[in-house]
Length: 80
Length: 222
Image (cartoon, rainbow over all chains, first blue to last red; front, side, top):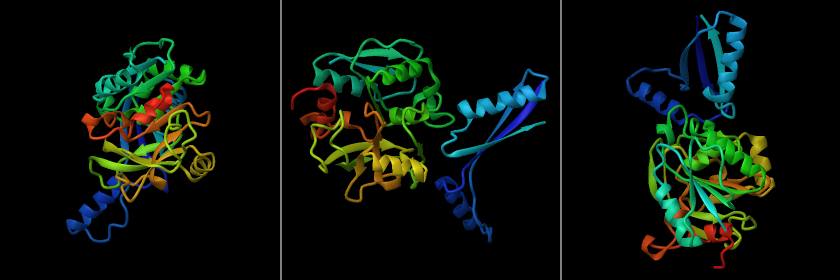
C-alpha cells in the first residue's frame, strides 16, 4: 500500500479572503510580523498500489479531475 | 418549449425553479436525478440553487462529476439551452461548461439580500426580452459567488459579450471581478448566474424582474 499526501494551494494572484481573515486574526492575537497567510487543503490518500510511478500518475489524475480546481489552485503530490 | 430540472442531493431551490418554469411555460418541467444518464428531449435544462453534496470539497465540485452532468454536457454540445442558478452556476464552472471559478465572498459572509443587475448583453437567448443596459432587481443568497477568471479569460469574456449580468449601482455582494454576476458560454446556449431570477417572477414575489429571462429562453411573448 502507498500513502500519499496531496497539498492544494491557491495560485499566485488569486485573492484569498479566508487567508486574509486568518492573517488579521493572528495579528489580533499579538503575533507581530505576520506578512501574509494563504489557506490551502491537505488530502491524505491511501492507495492499494505498490508501483510508485503508477500511484503518482493516478494521484495527479485525481488532482486534475477532482481534488484541485486548476483554474485557481495548484497541487503537489508527495508519496511517503 | 419543454424544460427539465436537474435534481441533486442538497439542492434547495429546486421547487422554486420547477414552480417558475411551470408558471411561465404552462407545463411542468421534467425532472432528472443525479444518476440519470439520459435527459429527455427538451429545449431548456435548469440546474437550481442550493448546497449540492453539502458544498464539500468546493461548491459544486462533487455534483459536477455526477453522471447527470455528462448528459447535460452532451445536450449543451447539441445546442440545448442550459441555465445554472447559484449552486447551478458553481456546478457549471466546476464541470467546465463555463470558464472561471466561484470563490468565497470577499466579506466571508453569506449574503441574502436584493441586488441590482445590469443587463450587460441583451442579445442572448436568455436576455432578449430585456433592454440593453436595463437595470433589474434580483435576490441573491450565497457564500461563494465571487467570480474569478484569469486575465486572458476575462478579456475574452468581456470582448465577446459573454458577461451577461453585472451587479449595478454599488450592489456587488461578493467582490466578483468586474462586478460579474452572470456569464454565457461562447456558443451562447449555457448561462450561469449567481442571482435568483426564479424568485422574482410574479406580484406575490414583490416584482417580476426575473420573468423576462425565462420568457426569453422559453420563447414566450411578454
